[in-house]
Image (cartoon, rainbow, N blue to C red; front, side, top):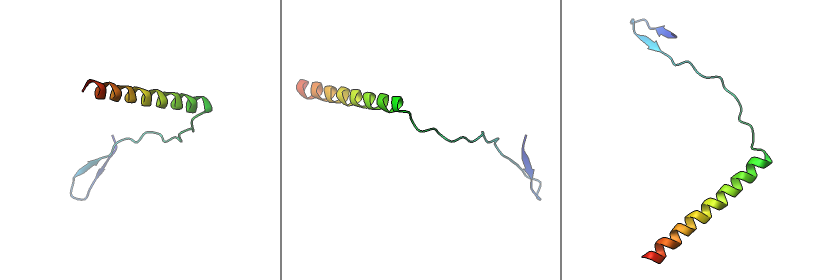
Length: 56
């Protein structure tokens, strides 16, 4: 366990930090999937709003 003992006798614990890595940019296939999911979500929300307005 990593800790530091101060002059007054207090112990300070520090968390173990995970390894850092750089995120990779999305591939063309992932970009296409994001676009399809976004359009599908927009259609779903639009349909739900249409149903809510038509019922009320």
